[in-house]
Image (cartoon, rainbow, N blue to C red):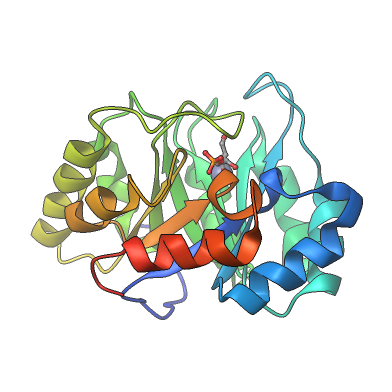
Length: 229
Ligand code: DX5
Ligand code: ZN
């Protein structure tokens, strides 16, 4: 039996800005603008060039972000061996770390190590992975991240069928009495956010919609589109 993960607040709605779409030539300025616009957390996509074809950045970017903001850091590990990242992320006092179900050998050890290190754990499911695979892990999870695009790059359109999958996961969580949040990542705009929210997503990751244009108006448009407000 796995040990339970430390519990965290369960927001009615949180907006996590994915820095993959930020302008790295003026990262500090973009982070300040996103904070001023009212984002709740920063989502950091680490890619290793193996689990996904792209390489983004590594733990040094997390270190930089820790210096730039007091907001929670939400790290999404698109890597084959997430366990290897846990000690450094823990040292950096990262709040949340999410790992993919689809990694070789499965996510069990990495999820347990994240919890043991006092961080909050998330399980990520690729678009083609069934929500039911999350069942054995529920006691450990702060969040289940449903990929609403194929993982590996920003700026892709929200995949059809995503809202039905969110609904199915929401039903499953209710059946199990689980307080895990449903997080969605990929293709979120002011057009797609309302459907995801109504289906049960409460943690919303957005990259291009936050950093792709003027940051203040981008965040405002996302927030105003949320049926809960
Ligand atoms: C995709 C990443 C996302 C990405 C989302 O693999 O996990 O976090 O930054 O970007 P947008 O919001 O542009 O689809
Ligand atoms: Zn992500």
